[in-house]
Image 1 (cartoon, rainbow, N blue to C red):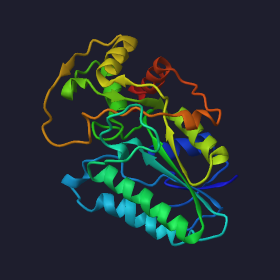
Image 2: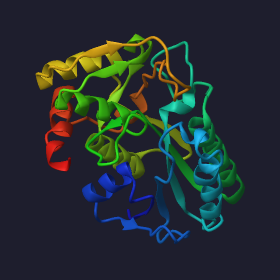
Image 3: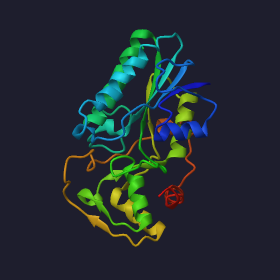
Image 4: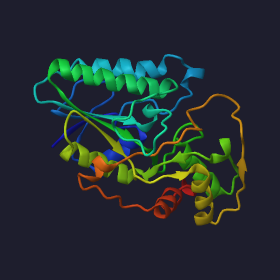
Amino acid sequence: MKLSIFGATGFIGKNFCKQFPEHIQIPREIKSPKSKNILYFISTAHNYNIYSDLTLDVETNIHLLCEILKNCKQKGLIFNYISTMHVYGIQKKLPINENSICYPEGMYPITKKCAEDILITFCKNFNVKYRILRLCNVLGFDSNFSPKKNAITWMINQLKKGQDIDLFYGGNFFREVMHVKDVCNAIQLICKKGNTNEIYNVGSGEALTLKALMEYSKKILNSKSKINIKHKLSKSSETLEKSFWLNTSKLNSLGFKKQFTLQSTIEEITKNYSSEL
């Protein structure tokens, strides 16, 4: 299996290509696959673009996808699309399974869900197969992480530096996290063994409140930082107060087992931080 990888320069795409260099990286200017198996990472990464560029999420997550789909009508093609758990929105029942009705809020998850629906419709019309992978919060060192992008990794590294952090809504909502290397292994496994025309949740199947996660990180890192409890956001943000916890039984049925514990994840994503400053 050779995957044509679109979006190989982003955080997860770059890590995937490093772990699995046998696949084909498609340059940004090219819009056609070079194999019959596609892995599509191209995406915006947070819900704040609405304040600076109202059309960016639409152009990146929808329009660009459609431009590439124009060249994906070959018989036997499989399109593996990387999505996000944020398409689920508010859910009353946790953990969330793949059949749950989605209620996305914010430009990022709305356009990601729209992209999923466009892909499914395209595949039905042109007899192309697909898989949709909805990822949990992915942790791993990223030189571009910030309070907006890869925010949990950013907060953990603030604790490593001894900097105080703020937890909005008391941090009393669930987050599910997994090391980027485990996420990449799960993606590779689904692309090799997963059923086509299906959706897969990618996560650890375990969840902690954000407050518990930060307190545990502080303990592991022996940090002197202060965790400040806030109850109101200064402006709208990406569903920070909503809980996400994925049912990963479909992924596990393929034989997936994660390699990183929460402790080893925290230690690994912070070990090289000082050298990158």
